[in-house]
Length: 218
Length: 218
Image 1 (cartoon, chains in turn brown, blue):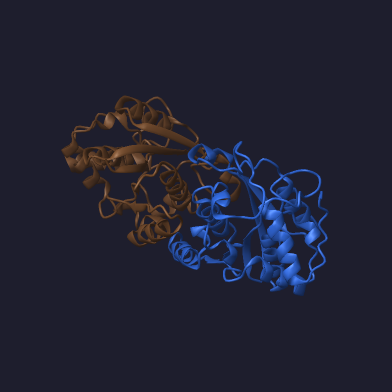
Image 2 (cartoon, chains in turn purple, red):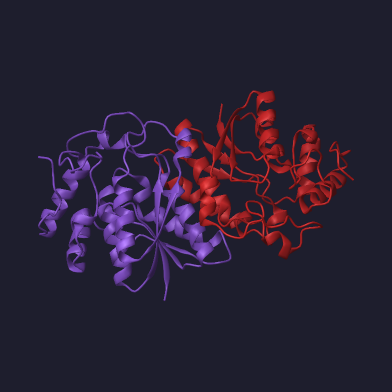
């Protein structure tokens, strides 16, 4: 059986990716990163789901890299912007080169456990704002992964050309329960329903025709 | 003035690279990694030299990534092999994908501080054993770095075609004191003079015609 490392945050995109990989017959090792998020709801959802599925799961604490980074509202005291993603409000959530940092560790892990592939959930909705969610970036990392070790690892982003609505449509086909994923930027008991992440989630569910299982505050 | 992030371990190669970058007029930010080495002599030498030169210096603790890695004698209890590097004994010192992990963080740092370049000390002597010290790997990382962010960062390895003897020859031209670099895998007061790293250092000094300032135990 082909083995893959899936970068799994606990959010809806990588939740769908995890199930996609399992449905395609991969033996999956899930990998999450703690980069000093203000809350760990996503990571808790990720851990619970892996336990439920019997999927191996590791969380790597990369909090210390924040000393190299500036201006991220996910990892500092800057306010989480409310309302729909606009380019300006979303930019404050970008940690420079986070995807390459996560991928490089996932590739190292794949070499260690002799996995053939690293899958991550970059997707089309992010293209205009995150340069490291573009197909050409994934291709460059795939090439770099083929050169970094004698053991060959592929880097793939199966959802690279999809937006969140189409990802949710795949989730609908897979019959997965999005109530076991967490999206909201705020870490309260229920999702806020107001932040950019919640709004994108709500729109994606509507697009896919899924009855949203998420409990919102409002 | 052009700004560069130099990956600086405190060893003789990156010590030479640091001085090379300064001599070429770069404003340098030095970056070291603590990946759970058994001793921190190298890092202490790196910190001391940056303080002396007035170069900004950061140390990122990446110890936690070791949970993903296996079989490294630098980061576990496996014996450090004595004698000259042979392919078999050297392999046990390789942490999978360590160079990509360090480079990805250095690129993120370069984006943060708006540096134009990341320099690292990969060199020819390692080619047959470390796949991620080959020119094609550096090229792939240079391409990936040009795509990961709107801010353009170059990745260069100025010594990529040189062996350690030639690197020491550059150091001789620069007039730098290798007594301020640390090479030995063992962390005792004096260098052991016996491990593979010490033996390569001794040979490099001989090749370059430098009177070795290092105090050895034997």
